[in-house]
Image (cartoon, rainbow, N blue to C red):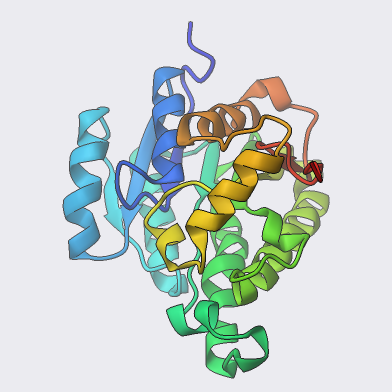
Length: 255
């Protein structure tokens, strides 16, 4: 018996086989879960579909998380095909490259709104449409980063968006706890992904983490997947509204 046998859910945010979301998908699949996937556009579909089909997924749907209508269509299709779901993985974030590269004071109003919409509000929208499909309860997990707690050079507006995301986790958890729906975040250290390529001085951040984290190394997609699996499974049935640090988190050594 696998830990997630009989469980069904959807993952938003796989871009390629280096994605944190793909690390989560692999762990869920190995534990017996049935997974649906979404993709943003045709270019990403070419990357996502082979990965999803490689682990037996049959539901692979388009979704721009900036559109409530498209999010609603995903959950409408899941309800048609499955009836109910048990989990949602939100691994989506975006900020304009110039708003990451430029000083934070130079963040454009439009860029600020965009980062907040894609990186934080999309969790709220997904949850709104997921709740009716979780009559017996469920688990929702999102991905954060230490830049929500500390001012990390080069992370800029994304750090503010991640702070909003973590606050949203707490408010959603408080609201949905009585429905037995848990909402948590996983905060991983810097990992080489497509999204990370837009963060300034990323290689330097990897080096600093290797020097200062309690583990004296960076973590990988598999380890984030394992932490997410715990939060998505019944092993964490009493855990909600929390941010789980995978890399030693806030307790970075000064050494």
